[in-house]
View (cartoon, rainbow, N blue to C red):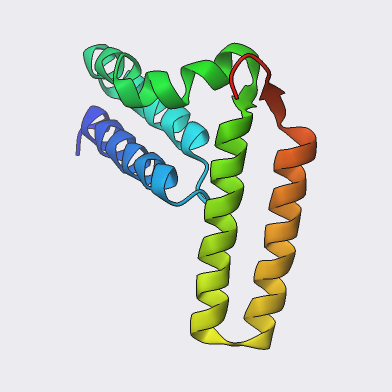
Length: 124
């Protein structure tokens, strides 16, 4: 198989995972979109330009790359959706080990988002 086709395929895979990350905040959307852009650039400059000029990329990646900050509203969305998803899983499976692991992951993720990810002050 030709390298460019493989790179294009990988670009679409990572873009798809990034889109899932919009819905499932456990997946880091920005990182997957950046990886997708890398593979699109390796496959076709035109395809990469189309991707980086898309609404998805501009809304999710550009603001973060610009100042390495996210809005407080986005922080809340991430935290609420993470905890809702974790509580649903805990309720469905009712396994003490899963509950402990998800609680620890949720606490660590919450602390990282609240303490280490900078907040963009101009938008709330």
